[in-house]
Structure formats: C-alpha cells, structure tokens
Image (cartoon, rainbow over all chains, first blue to last red; front, side, top):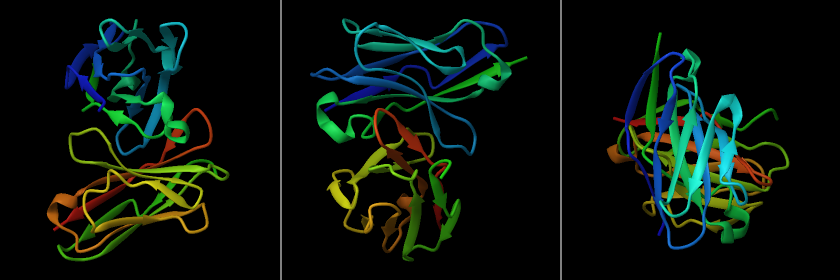
Length: 118
Length: 111
C-alpha cells in the first residue's frame, strides 16, 4: 500500500523568502507524484506532477519540485513566496499501472499549511 | 461547464438522517472520483466511476455509504443514517486525461 508523509504540518515564512515543503512517500512500485494547493473554501488545484523523465518538475505560480527516487521524496520549493501563496498544500501519489485511475485515485498526505507573513 | 460543481456547499444533518450530495463533473469527463476530507486531514479516496460504471468502491467506509452515476455524468453520494464521524468535507473530482479537477466540496456537519 502507498502512503505519503508531509513532515511539517505548518510552515510560517516571510514574504519574498524561499520555502521548501517536504514530502516523503512509501511504495514498493513506481509512482506518479502530485502537489495540490487548497485555498480556504476552495477545491484542490494541481500545482505540478511528476510522471516520468526529468526529476525536476516546474509547475504553476513559480513552484517546482524534485523527485528523488533513492530518498523517496518529492519536496516542493519556491524561491520567493508571496502573501497570496498562503494556503494548504497536499502531496499525493498514485499508481501508474492503474489505468483510468492513475490521475484521480490519489493517496494524499496530511497537508502543510503555508503562512506567508508580510 | 467551467469546472466541477458540487451542491449543496454546506449541509447540516441530524444524527440518523439520510443525506444526498451532488456532483456535476466537467462535461465530457469520463472518470469521476469521490473523496472524504476530515478536519485537518488530507482527502481520502472513497469511490471511482468510469462513465456510469462504479469500478472501485474500496474506500467506502461502511454500507451506509453508496454512490451512483446513472447516466455517466452527474453523480450522487448518499449517506444513510448519518453519524457524527461522517462530519467531513466531501470532494468530487473528474478527469479525462492526465489531470483530475476537484470541486469545492460539500461540508457535512452531523449534529
């Protein structure tokens, strides 16, 4: 069974500072990896995904993540955050061999609340 | 439509009451997923439809939960005899290829 651990439940940071949100997963097979963002009272929005190929993935809003197979990690980074990045971020995995559910049947972590202070 | 639409946005139910939560997926999306998100937790998978066929219901927590998608578009998640532990946000997502799009969710509070 797959599982996802987000190591920090809350990350406070000042505006224009860099940030890293950590994600580790456990799976005995290859995985697809995702980061979603959830603004208050909103649905989940996809930031980026790793399917294969280059281990550095760039997403929307200036975010990027690096897949590290040996460390089973997929940490999310942004070099300079804005107030508007304040939200909850979820890391998720799925099974690439599951056909029609590869992009929708996801195992999520517990979430990291990013708070950007002025 | 422009996105995945869920209704109602908020639902308060008395313990023991039956509830029905509706999901309107993006038009043409074949796959539809339901998730349960408890307070302070990540979403947890409940069930999956491909068109009208419910192909995976491994995440449904009890036989009080069931879902349907009779015409392969709109889906309804029904919870019978609600209990306090059913209080959560219920999220619906739809997918065509390579990305799932989530609705805003229905917040169910059982009192």
